[in-house]
Structures are given as C-alpha cells and as structure tokens.
Amino acid sequence: MKLVEHFQYGLNSPICLTWELTYACNLACVHCLSSSGRRDPRELSTAEAKGVVDELQKMQVFYVNIGGGEPTVRPDFWELLDYAIDHQVGVKFSTNGVKLDQKRAQQLANTDYVDVQISLDGATAAVNDEVRGPGSYVTAMRALENLAAAGFVKPKISVVMTRQNVDQLDEFAAIADKFGAQLRITRLRPSGRGADVWDELHPTAAQQRQMYDWLVARGDNVLTGDSFFHLSAYGEALPGLNLCGAGRVVCLIDPVGDVYACPFAIHENFLAGNVRSPGGFEEVWRSSELFLSLREPQTGGACRSCGFYDSCQGGCMAAKFFTGLPLDGPDPECVRGFGEQALAARSAEAAVPRSDVDHSRRGRKAPVALTLGVRPDKACETSPLVGTSADARLGPAAARA
Amino acid sequence: MWKRSPSTACAVSTSTDQGAGPAAAGPAFDPDRPYRCSPSVALRPEPFGALVYHFGTRKLSFLKTPQLLSTVQALADQPDVHSALVAAGVTAEQRPSYLRALAGLAASGTIEERT
Image (cartoon, rainbow over all chains, first blue to last red; front, side, top):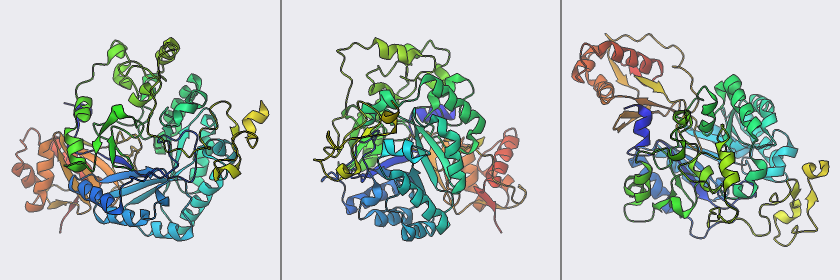
C-alpha cells in the first residue's frame, strides 16, 4: 500500500493538528474561518489546556498549529507555549502580530521549537486592511520588524489568496525576503465568516491558473499547507500529499475543546467529540464515529469517472459543504469548471449549511457582504453602536467604482 | 524508501511543508561504522512504518516500512549498520535499498554515527 493510502485510512495519532486557543480576537477579518471575535466563557482553562498537551505528548503528536481567534490575547498564552515545548510538543502559532513587541520577539528568538506565522492578506496596506481591518498591515509589519531585529530565524508570512491579492504574489515574496521570512499561501475557504465573502473574494478561474503557474515556477520555497491540491488537476502535482487529511491525519481542537475534522469544518456535521469527555482527545481521535467513517475508502461519487480524480481527489470537503455542494461531487473551484456548473445548478431554495458556532462581535460583522470596500470605520471596532450605517466609509475598491 | 514529507496534509500547516532534498552533506555514510538514531529525533510507530520528527530541524519525514523502523531502532545496540540490518531481519536482496534509505537518513540527520 502506498503511503498516501495509509494516510487515507487514518493514523494512530494525527500528523499534526490545529488547536485554536480562544475565539477572542482584536481583529474582525471578513473571511475569518472560525467566526472569531468574542471569547467563549467555556474555553479550556489553563489546567485543561495543559492536560491536552499531556495527551498530545503521550500520543506523540510532535507539533501543533496554534491559532484562534488571536491566541496571544490569552493571558496564559506564553505559559502554555512554554509548557507545550517542555513536553515535546512543538508549536507553530498564527498571529496577527498584535502582541509581538520587541520583548516578546526577543523571547521567541530565544525559544527552541517555536515557529511564528504572521497573517497578511495583502502586500499593500490597502489590499490587506480591506480584509483584515484598519491598521492590521502596520501591526503585521511591526511584528515582522521586531522578529527580524531580535534575530528570530525564518518566521512565516501567511497569506490567504483572494481575488484582490493574486496579482501581488511577487510582492509577497519580496516582503518575505526583506524580513528573512518564508512565504506561505493558502486557499480561501467559505468557512466561518468566509462564507459571507467567498463569492466576492475567491480567485477567479483565470487567477487559479495564475496561482498554479506561479507555484510551479516560483513555489520551491513557498509553503502551501497542501491547500491547493485541487489545482493539481492542471497537470503537474504540486508538492504535498494531495489529499484531504480531515479526520485522517489532521483535525481541529477548538477553544471549548470540541474536536472537528478540520479547521475549516466548524459545523456540527464534522464534530467528532470533546476533549473534556471521558477518554479525552485520544478517545475522540481513535474511536469517534465521524472519524472512523472519514477513514473508510471514499468512492469519488460524481468525480469518479473524471480522469483527474487521482490528482485532486475531489478537492476540499469544507469548500463543498459550505457552498451547498454534495461532498462526493466536484470542488466549487474544480479546475475543469464542474464546480461552477454545480454551483449554478443549485436550486434557489436549497439551504446552504451555516455553522452555528459564531463568536463574531456584534456590530462589526462581515462588512464586505454587499460591496467590497465598505468597511466600518476604525472607531466602530470598539463600539457595537457605531459604524452600522452612517459611519461607514468608502474603501478604495468602492471609491474606484 | 523514505522521503522527507513535502507537506503534511495539514490544512493549516506546518513548518515542514517544503520539499527540499536531503540536508547538506555531512560526513559520508559508512555502514561499517556504528550509528544511532539522533537524540533530537522522535519515532512514532504507525501501520506503514513510522513518523519521524526531528526536533532540531523541525522536519517531519516517514520510514516507509516497519523493517526500516526496526533497523533504525537496532542501530544503537549494534556494532555497525550491517549488523543492525541483520538484527532487523532485512534480507540480502533487500539490503541495497535499505542501505540507500539509511544513507538518506544519515544525510538528513535522522541517524548519526556514534562514537
């Protein structure tokens, strides 16, 4: 059996997993995959989080991708970081950079086994702040400067590819070079608040081809999180395992301890259990009905007869689910166009599933839903009362229109 | 026999997803000498063989057969690599491919000569 086939049938422990420490976030990115904003009162305590680390150590999960929300706003973030590293669980954490001042940057530079990933969704403030909010570009740049000054080796710059930033790929690479960082690009999914903006933000078919060509030509040192495996149907397979690892080799632990098949699948249909239940995470990973079913051989469904099925494996489960497409059919961004056909053929009455897990701050949700470019003013970032109508300013995109 | 993972299928991935070849050349692999699994490396047995994680380089790789895992585990107790292969039950026919795999593991720092 080939290695990839073994992976499809699941492993004793995840290869790695995503652990979102909090739903609290200082930003309100329009495409947030976890609809983060407000802390959930049920979030794991420090002691419970350490218990999860103990389990991961025992299961030999060698590293976790920590995210949120904004993980660094948890007061015990640094304590948990040290605890994980001391227990042979390496940490890579994603952050918007808000807490990475000179002191923290120096602390990180002095810590082994930690990787830092700064989120940036535009190579210019205009493009980035449109999606991530006013000031977020400056925050990210300051964090990168602090890390570079502290001698932190090779942080990652993580970019979600959108219609607005595909043309900036070379500029992102230049920013990474400037800070001694490594570029990482990932796919926009219609998950969380991403569902509200996916139609407007997801790359066009021509841009998908552009990304693929760029990755083939220039992607040697660019990380992708294996998130573009649906593009492998263009020809040459992109580096990576080219399979959906959900519940098979990866999963998500959310801030309240719920275990989902993947970070992009926060929905009750993909909820496998909770780390607080008897048997803990290990029991959920090894025995949950959902994960066992995901590890059964997949049929390929409507894609089975497609000559490219071996390359793309039908694409991303979450992308299909949150656009209302059947899980055994084509990905909405199928490079042969079958996804677009399927989207067009959805009946108007068919309900597109939505997650009922939403921690968005009231009054600052999804400003992009109608017209990209209309964002609440900075002032309303802190007040739920401001910015709902009259305060909205026109962003560059709208101004051009 | 083994390869560094070009990625980890991790939706929100990792420091390990670039597909560089084996690490820069260290001392040449010499199967007549004693070796060991690097102390910076953790091995996790899986049905296909094992997951290998190098805490120093933060690279993830795979041992693609259970016998290769047995060989790597046997290295520390054997006077040379050939003896470890015998101890792990690797046949003479398989030996060339296992030696190639082990040379790759030495190049990546997964195994190292012990003194």
